[in-house]
Image (cartoon, rainbow, N blue to C red; front, side):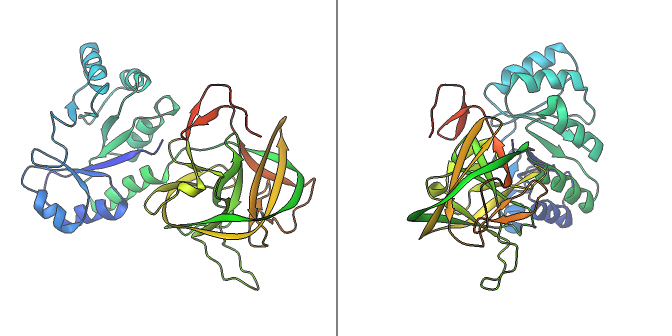
Length: 331
């Protein structure tokens, strides 16, 4: 789940506000009367009496001091986002609220508190409201929230066959992120078996590196996006998010700048892992690379039966991109 980062400002500071905007904060909690000045500096949601979200109407700010507070907040969470508005809170009551579901945020004034809130029950709260004294702290704490994303557990699969399948439409996903060697997108013909397809970070005699791009696969394929969901590659549009993953399972969201669909010769790559089988259809070109167990890139042009690559396995099927527990056959 992608976490929210709000920033609370009690005194007007252009430096603090700019730091929040540049770090990618989702909202500002501000006093009444600041709305126009904030909007002049950048587009961001505001939380105030005259803001985009109004306390007591769109979002509730509550204290958590006893069991009666916990019950009241749990009831509110069924309908509204709730902010636990106190600098110190206890973990056990928060665990109870996190387990009950809903959009729960807590105030934090330190990196330690932030990490604790985001790690509760291994799931964490939905977000944090950062209370910081300096612009550098705002950037560091918001950046820590945004850099932290759902880890995935990659497995080692064995290639069974690589065959040419003719012409078809494939999708290049151009993101607003400069990816590093070993990073890419999780893509596959089946939602339960996704391949780590690397970004075009490598030099080639024919093509300059394009570290923002993943030549991901045929347009029917699934691609992993934040919040544990998938989309079809054909659905991706500018402004949506995809989940960038590296060989260690670390992930981060990336905004799609554009998705290019072009007709190209295609390969079918089939693999097996722990009794499960999966495949991916990709362009037949040396610049499309899967990922070996050590993180090294492996061009599909040189891929052979018996080679090992990294995949993500999941047991459940998908319904409109959401994981479901039901009988679904894909082949």
